[in-house]
Image 1 (spheres, rainbow, N blue to C red):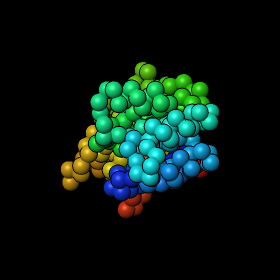
Image 2 (cartoon, one colour):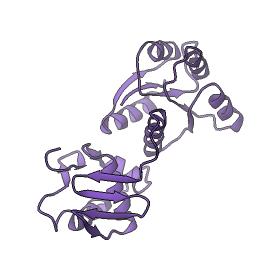
Image 3 (cartoon, helix red, strand yellow):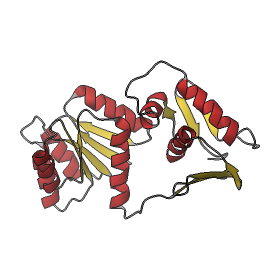
Image 4 (tube, one colour):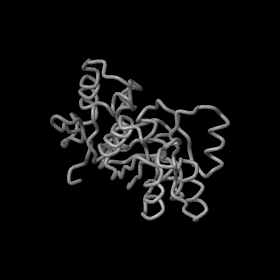
Length: 227
C-alpha cells in the first residue's frame, strides 16, 4: 500500500515510518498541516495516517474536512494525544474513519490501517489464510499442511497467523514482540527463537520443503517455494 503519514513529532514519525516500511508499504511523510493537505489532495494514497494537532496553520480536522468536501474518500486514521470522547467524536464526524490515541502499539496501528483499506475495497473479513500448501482456518482455529492437520498451542497459532498475514515480508523481532506477545519493549530473552524453533518442528520438519526462513540480521519470513 501507499500510505501518507502527516505527523510533526519526529520520534513518532520515525517509529511509524520504519514499521510500515518493514511491513512492505510505501510511505510518504510530511511534518506540517499545509504540506499534508497539499499531498493528500494532489496525490493518490491507499490510506492516510493523520495527526490531530499540526503546525503550519492547518490542523488535522481542517485537512479532513477539506478532503471530504473535495469528495476524496481515502481512508483516514487519526492519531491524537487527545483521548477525550468529545474530541474522538469530532474527528470521526469531520470525516475520519478511525481514531487511535497516543501512545499506541505499532501492531494495532498496522492492523487498523489494513482493516480500513480492506473496508474501502469492499472486502469482507478474512476467514482463511493460505501460503503454498499451508492452510489456516481462522474460524475453526485449525491448521493443515498438504492436507495433514497440525496441532498448535495457542501462542504457536498466533505466531503462525502473524507470519502468514505477512507472508513474503520480512517480519522483525519488534513486530513479533508487539504483534504476538503484546510487548512494547524488548525483554532481552530468546522467547521468539524458542517459539519459532517449535513452530518449525511442526510446520516444516515433517515436510520436504521449508516455509519459515531466517533472514539474517533482520528477522523471519514465511514464504512458499517459488514465491
